[in-house]
Amino acid sequence: MQITLHLNGTSHHLDVDPRTTLLDALRHHLGLTGTKKGCDHGQCGACTVLMDGRRINSCLTLACMVEDRDITTIEGLGTPGNLSPLQQQFLDHDGYQCGYCTPGQICSATGMLEEIAAGWPSHASDSLDAPFDLTHAEIAERMSGNLCRCAAYSNIVAAIRQAAQETRHEDAA
Image (tube, rainbow, N blue to C red; front, side, top):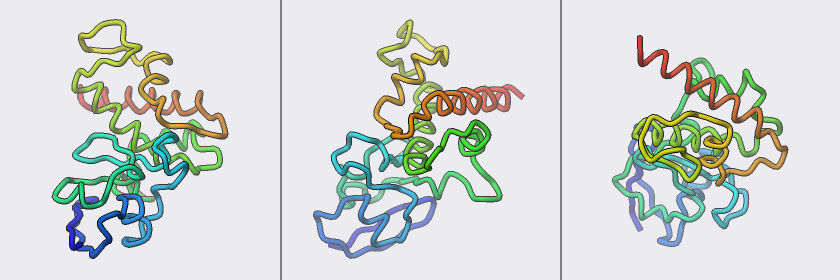
C-alpha cells in the first residue's frame, strides 16, 4: 500500500503492508528510532507520538490511518542544539534515568500541556473550567498512560511543571 506520512514537517512516501503500525513505519521504514516499542499493547506509552497535536499510541495505530495527518515524533520537537522547553527540563531535572521511556514521556507531556491550554479537564481537575493548577495529582493523572520503569516520576513531574511555568511566562511576555 502506498501512503504519504506528514512527519515532523516533511512528507514521506512509503510502500507498506496495510497491517504496518505507525511505530514500525517510523522505526523500520523511516529509521526514526526515538519512538520506542515497549509493550506493543498501548499500555506503557513508550511509543507516544503526536497526531495533529494530540497524543496517540503509535503501536496501536496503523500507518495507513494517519495519512494526511501531521505526525510529530521526539525528533520533531527539538534538536541537540535547540531543545524544546520540555526536553531541556527533562535534562535539568534528571527526568530520564535510563532514557527508554523519555521520548514517549516528552511527547505525551507536550500533548498534555496543549490539552491544559485548550481547557480540557482531567479526572483530577478540581473544576471543569480552566485554568487548571498543575498539581502533582493533576500531572500524574494526565501522564498516567506513560510508565517509567526506573520510577523517575517525581523528576518527570518537576520537569513538566517547570516547562509549563516557563511557557506561561513566555506567553505573557
